Figure 1: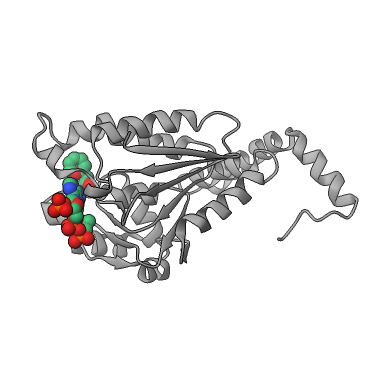
Figure 2 (figure 1 turned 180 degrees about the vertical axis):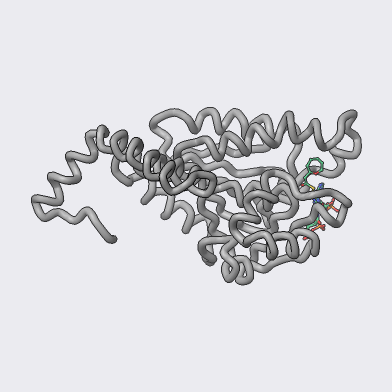
Length: 251
Ligand code: LHQ
């Protein structure tokens, strides 16, 4: 197994586990991630954490495997990467990246496809594609453009420059820097898993649609999803709790 899968209450924890190769992606690793993401669709899973074993999050594509392969990056992306990245975006549950160390190439892409990124102080982000004559993939040209804006995204992605965790925090690439990224991600994941009803997942759907929608389209989607959210028993329970003076709001 090159993916360790753990489960604590409603939180599924996936650890990329090829530490000698800095958790670089192989077909085998993609296959195990695909199976775990399928498992993540079960209703009792309420949040997912992705992290890496050893000193790296992931160094991106395993270049030894890519070099000895009978097919090129286009086919590799189609078969292995894109289905998993789509699965993360389509999963209506929060996916947290605990970026424990260096992330390079598709490792950065995977982190940015997640909903929340918590970086260790020693983490770093290397858009390694340019160094081997490739363009950004794994959704990175889309996610980095949205996080950084087109001008900064272009500059960073073609520079290949390694960003420290502090720099990544300053420009919004990560949400938090923590001494122990995994512990902090577990804390956040437990909180999100305990949130009432389906509101976290439905909020993911709303935010995912927001940039492509007009204001009117988004109002309509909010209307529909609010109705759906309110049909979960948690809504009436939480409203009743509020009216009985139990806390429901800011924590
Ligand atoms: C590795 C790798 C690695 C294998 C470190 N592969 N062994 C998609 C589809 C198809 C094709 C192509 O690409 C893509 C998307 C992509 O991800 S493209 C980008 C691919 N990734 C890279 O170009 C990054 C390559 N790695 C590095 O630049 C460095 O290793 C980083 C900056 C990540 C870390 O540097 P260091 O901390 O100095 O570690 P290191 O270089 O000494 O690596 C430690 C070991 O891990 C070493 O093996 P060894 O046997 O000598 O200890 C490396 O060979 C191995 N390793 N990355 N991607």
